[in-house]
Amino acid sequence: MLNRREFIIALAGSAVAAMTGGTAKAEAKGKPGSMKNKRSKVSLVKTADRAAPSAGALYPLDIYVVAGNVTGLPEGIYKYMPGGHELKMVVKGDRRNELCGAALGQSPVKNGAAVIVFSAVPGRTTVKYGGRGIQYLHIETGHAAQNVLLQAVSLDLGTVVIGAFHDDEVKKVMDMTGTEQPLYIMPVGKR
Image 1 (cartoon, rainbow, N blue to C red):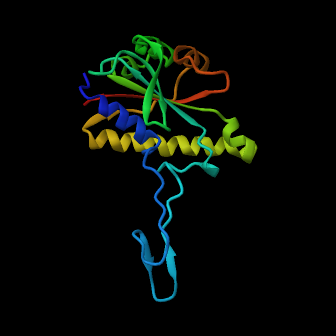
Image 2: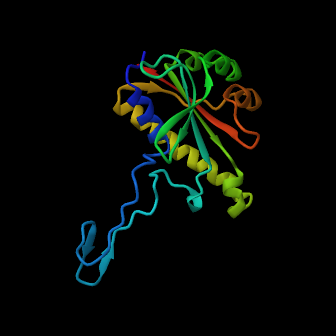
Image 3: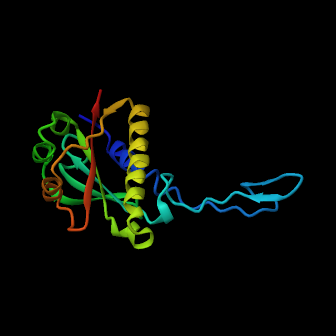
C-alpha cells in the first residue's frame, strides 16, 4: 500500500515533469538568473512550464492514474490536470483488474498500488508537424516515462513500462475520448 497521496501527485507531475514549475523569466542586466560574460549579456529564460520537452510546446500527452491501494486517494481513475496540478476523478472504483485484462494479463498492472497510463491526442502535434508529429509524441512519451522511472527510484518505489496491450480495451477501461491513443502503462508500488 502506498501511504502518501503526495506520492501519486508527485509521480503524475513528474510524468510530465513538474507541470506547475511555473515560468521563470530573467532579464539580462544583472537580475537574478542572468549571467554576464566579457563579450555579451546572456539572459536565462525558461519558457516551458514542463521539463519534459514537447515538439512545438504542443503537449499531446494526457496522464491518468489508476488508484487502487493508495491511502488518502479513493479508488478510481484520475486524469492529471496540469494547469492546477491536480487529479480529477473520471471513473470511480478500482479498475486495475480490468486494465490488467486489457494489458494481456500482465500481473504488475493488477498488483501495483497505482498505475500511470500515458495517452496522447495525436492531432495536437500533427496539426503543426503533419505525420512527423506522430514520431514526436512517441519521443515525448519516452521523456515523460523516464521522469516517472527516475522519480520512482528517488522514492524507493518500483515501476515498469508496459507497452503490450489492446488499445481499444484500454481506452474503454480508462474512459478515454475517441481521439486519445494509449501509449504506455506504468504500474507503481513498493519494491
